[in-house]
Image 1 (cartoon, rainbow, N blue to C red):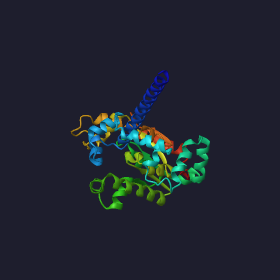
Image 2: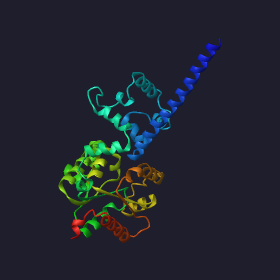
Image 3: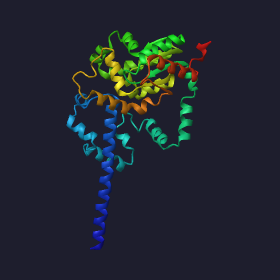
Image 4: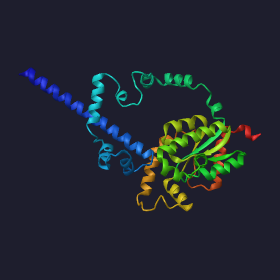
Length: 307
């Protein structure tokens, strides 16, 4: 009897621990879904329409109460002794060496990872980036205005990435989004970044705030451009956009400011990957321009143009 009771208690304890693990796993999945939605500035309604998943379930998923089938799939992976990612990735793990390499990289030390990156991308960063500078940040940070003024002061070309996209596609960004959707726009965005990097050795490029949410495009941008994050308080972002005559951020949306703060929070770590930051809050245009030019000079990004 005592043996049977011990077994029962052991099973109960195991189930309790498994339940705790499952709850933590679902919370982690929910946090990542919520974070991804925030970084891409998408409402739950938009994600629901695109995915065919109800807003109610999305809310449950983000709250850590996702369908238990997610947990069951992970248990199947554990029973098969294969990584969970193998069952959901697009690559065939049995015919590709990419998945095993990912696993090795995840277990590698910081020094080992650094050596791997050096082998895969041996070109010195400064040589690869040349005199190309990109300005990143939310709308209203001053990317277009400061970028154009800085380029004039340094005798460099200035480009707006959205204008490059429009020229290549032959239509305004708004029409492009309506016709091809966000996925089509992002594809053209990546092509435009690559085209600018291949065409210019010296340029200041202003990009849309959401580019940081596209890993492949953003990684390419950081590898081939010196990045400066133009940052400001959310209130100033909103005021500047409205000062330009654009009332869309507030139109019919009383929670627009809270949404803006949420976007900024979700992207902060991504923007922080830039080599330098210039805070434009509470500063005049002249003061912000002076700091941007000083930042560029201190990093010697366009030293050749000073001769």
